[in-house]
Image 1 (cartoon, rainbow, N blue to C red):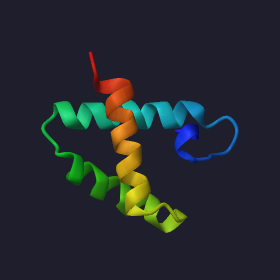
Image 2 (cartoon, rainbow, N blue to C red):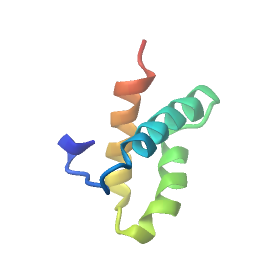
Image 3 (cartoon, one colour):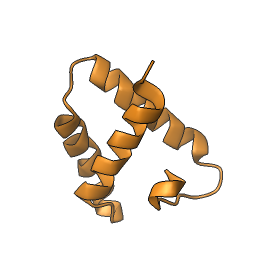
Image 4 (cartoon, one colour):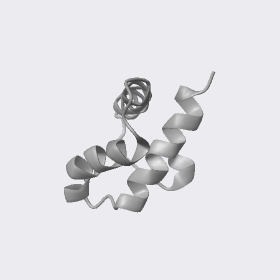
Length: 68
């Protein structure tokens, strides 16, 4: 996520990792990437995270945590 340009407060790494794992759980549960993008954006949009940012986050989570 840092390589994509995202920053977050020190000590919140575990929250970001948990979000990545939740994205995989949602995908395995049948949610589409677009549905996940919309869900996350509805929460993080107010914090200045764009829909394009969320799309990048979901893609990064899928390639990091969902493969295998």
